[in-house]
Image (cartoon, rainbow, N blue to C red; front, top):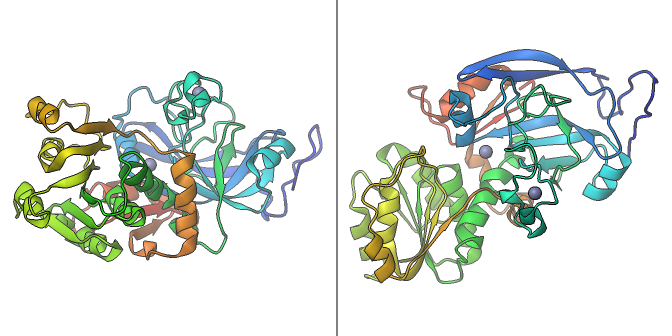
Length: 387
Ligand SMILES: [Zn+2]
Ligand SMILES: [Zn+2]
């Protein structure tokens, strides 16, 4: 464990930080679609409950693009984005090391949220819903004006607050692959834990992006015997990967009648579980009701741009005795098995990771993910400082 002396001693860094850096290169977002590179000072000292992380990679997901566009309300610009960090601990306080069970030199996956630990949700083990601290309190969402300012992982270094939740991961795993603990954790929670998917179930996963593909893996691990994944014609590559990860059927919803296909595949029984991870599109929510068997479960985990769903058929939900569950975020219960599954090497997750880009190309990374760059297809992208 490396604990730096406090007081007026000259700034010294642990041997893990070989350059003895005192500043961090960061991508700073100053407003909607406005990013710039800045060099910001590292904290002068790391207290007993805190740590400093050298960022090895930061995953990018749909929320990053929403943030980039300025669609998330109340963000305190300027700030450093980046909420899916994997890194190496370069410095850690004695208490933090003891509480988190990690030491300087360890590689860790860092959860986005900074739960308060005291509100009713935290006390009830539902810290995904915590609102006890500074509103949306998590990495990538706090401003430069909240000391020490280094709250985002589009940077060389990340400050680790006392409320941080970390998962140690083997250094054998490439950092950009390790960042897949985010989508994989989501798949495990949304496609397995929330609906209670079990051996022999039929599950329909609407949307073949990072989280849809992760849901395939989670459904397979849960023992589902029929996994169906939907996508658009442009998603051909993702649907092929879904089959490689264990999907039994993939359906191009632009060319095939989804409900009819599922009826054929299931011999009219329809699905036990439906998981919607499509962004923006509302039709999948309506379809999910039709795809469910009587007594089935629908998990809604895709954000629809704050729009209500047209064509939602209440009476079908009642008559079919459906369970509809919203799924927001991921927590320790799902991230921990995600990290272990990555370490196991059981799935060729590297096939999901399509792009590694340096911090300087953060904007290109975001546009790539949102298909704003014609002719280039991305599934999972990670920013790696110095890549
Ligand atoms: Zn994310
Ligand atoms: Zn709380």
